[in-house]
Each structure stands twice: as structure tokens, then as C-alpha cells.
Image 1 (tube, rainbow, N blue to C red):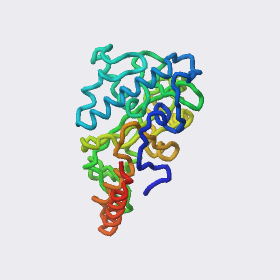
Image 2: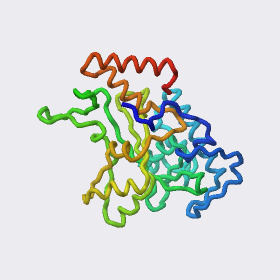
Image 3: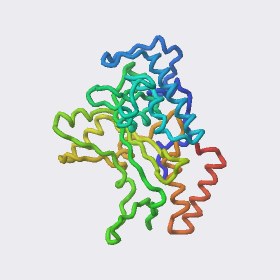
Image 4: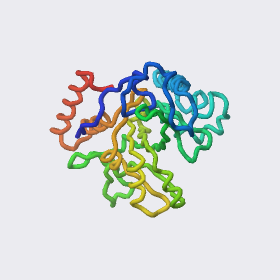
Amino acid sequence: MMKNNTKYKIETNINHLVGNNVTKTNVTNVTKVVNNNKKYTMLYSEYIDKVEHNTEILRNAIKNNININSLIGQFHTYDHKPGELHWSLLAPKWADIIPAAFLGHLAITGSHNGADGIRFCQDNNEYIETEYKINTVRSEKIIIGPKGGMQVPSNNKNTTPTGITSYISAKFDIHSASNLVTKNRETYLCLTDVDNTEKHFIDFWKLSGEDALAALRESDKKSRIISLAKFINLGNTVDSLVPQYTWTRFELDQKRKKHPNPIERKKFQRLHEILLREGKYL
């Protein structure tokens, strides 16, 4: 059930995580960091300040059960400070601003060739363009198949349920060959649960730009998808600056409550209790 790259705990040291979810490089003096990407000219120290501000807003909202969407105007983006843009201009960007805040990135609210956001890569000392996709699942409707896999039933009783990693996907509209090439950027999939307001954000996965582009080239339709199965098989889950539910716990909770085999339910329940007792959950 659990893959080697699955996380249980999230480090929250901003010097380790900010803007670089895969490399844990400790930056002790942010004023001396040099940015090699001249397209994005923000000083790294300013980037850090903005990310820290966004993280504090996000943590406070989660701690006090505040609707994050209602705070959309309080977040920094690459282009704008809090309060600079009217909410009607920010609303279409909420699906970029909120994932970026979770990941320690900055969303883009101006025009930068279609990129949704940027993160600072400490390996190369440069800003990297990012793409964010959000999908939702209704945990109350998920069933566990006879082989133990999570499935989403169809509204048509004559249609077999769909495996959850095929059901969940990142959706893209590809208008031309030149438009397709612009999708060669780090792509993040954020999964949320609309039936669980307390643990609404489940997890994030990342694909490299090369893998995202290769997956999109498997179809020639205007509307294309990259399934969660591809994100899991080709990419990895990524840490965030604010704890999430995690895919591991989500899957375990579904199986310990819904598995059709009572012996299996007990097995997953025992595993849940062990992880809870050992503090392996967030």
C-alpha cells in the first residue's frame, strides 16, 4: 500500500523548504544568494519575506478554521502585494495562489508566458516556472474494491467503478503545437477532499517538465489529462510549509473503514493505531 517515497512528517524549517521541495539546502544568508534567471528579477531576500508572510497567513487560517479563499487578497504574489489587486482580478488566480502558498512558491498574477508561479531552485540559483492543477475527490463516495483498491462508483449502475488514480487527473487545454511546448515546466497536482473540511488538502504531487510534456503528447485532442497514476509513477509527493492530510493517511483511513474484508479492515486499523501512537502522522 505504501510507496518508498511517501512522507509522514513535514519539516517546517523555511530555510530548508522554501521554494525548493526536493533539495534541502540551508541558506544562512539570503542577501548573498544570486539569481541566474534574468527573466525574474526579484531579490531572493524579498522572495523569502513574501513566502514567510504567505505561510503565516495560511497557518493562521488552518489553525482557526478560516476559509482560505476569503483571504485571497492577503497573499503576496510575484507581481503584487496584498491589497494591490481587486478581489475580482484575484479570484481567477486562486487555484494558483493557494497551492503556491502551501509549497513555498509565489503565484504569478501578471503575464509571464502562461506560467502559474515560480519557485527558487537553490541548486541552480534561479527561479523556475511552475504550473498548478487542482482536483477534488468526495471521500464519502469512495468505495474499496474486492482487491483492496480505492474506487469511485459511476452514476450509471451498469458501469464499473473507476480506480481512483485514473479518476483523479490534471486537466489541460492544448490549443496548438506551440502552446503544448509551453507545458514543459514543473507541474504540481493538488488534491482536495470536499467532504472533509478539517483535512481538506490531501497532498501534492510533482512532475518534471519533461515528464509532463511527454504525458500530454500521448493524446492529440484539445482537452488532455495527466492522471494521478502518472503523477505517482513518474513523479513524487512534495513537502509543504503547512501540514497536509497526506495521501498515505487518506488511503489508510478509507481502507480501515470501508474494506469489504473484515480481516483486512482490522489489519489497516492496527496499522493506523501504530502510526498514530508512534507520531508518524502529521
